[in-house]
Amino acid sequence: MSEFKPLVFSGVQPTGNLHLGNYLGAIRKFVALQDNNDCMYCVVDLHALTAQLVHDDMRSQIRSITAAFLAAGIDPVKHIVFNQSQVPQHAELAWIFNCVARMGWMERMTQFKDKAGKDRERASLGLFAYPSLMAADILVYRATHVPVGEDQKQHLELTRDIAMKFNLDFEQQIRPSGFGVDITVGDQPVHAYFPMVEPLIDGPAPRVMSLKDGTKKMSKSDPSDLSRINLMDDAEGIAKKIRKAKTDPDALPSEVDGLKGRPEADNLTGIYAALADKTKTDVLAEFGGQQFSVFKPALIDLAVEVLAPINGEMRRLMDDPGHIDAVLRDGGARARARAEKTMTEIRDIIGFVR
Image (cartoon, rainbow, N blue to C red; front, side, top):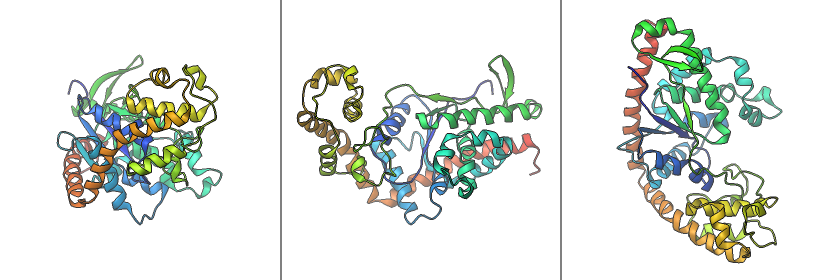
């Protein structure tokens, strides 16, 4: 192998309802990336256990995420759509990475600090080691690119650190194996087994905020369903939530600078811009000086126009769980074949007897 074959990988946890922020920030990008890349999109159900060990509706959630992928336009024939637990090689590589990664690296992960809160002693080991499994998800396929949001960039940096340490620790075993690639990291030449994964942050990936509080990110875990537009919301539900969305008494400004200090106005303008594939400047050129009583109906029409087809297709797919399961089985088999090739080589590099 003279170079790493380009491959895009990303995953979504099956926890809670997918919402507008997930669509605009991630899934829409997944769809666009498949046009010119080899892509693998995973429902990361093993990760879901870190948030909640016992799930009453795990299968339904896995199917719902898969339905969203397919309804949004991801092609499971040209690319691979699967759920993580069908590929045991993820967990096998994660254990090896647990032995590669350092405790200090994990302790610096801000997501662990945020999710564990003050009661860190009661947090699960799985939550602490979550980034190691995330690295394995990516590197078991030797993926080269990962579309990420701001909250995952630190984990991707950790993935690079783990890959680099493995490459350096086992360089003498990798070189004669014939499995490696000569790369340069900084000024350092390395005969590497794993690539230095690159983030994909180009293109529109707006930070969609809560409809009830423009200073907080739209979240599946928010107790108020009115805070988010779920991908399974019908037209009436979308309209109701936008009508009830928090605003301020002033008209929309004509310039983007006028949105400063107005988080709710900024959020709704950003949502409109993202759905219309325009800039905030474009939106304010059209609606600047207008009251929200004029802007909200236009936003409702646009949101329903964009999301209603996805919603309808998701509902159709969810009524046919056998089809969704068949897509996941096919994707799982293809993913396992790729992952096992990697793990066979890694077992040889490490020196396991098989």
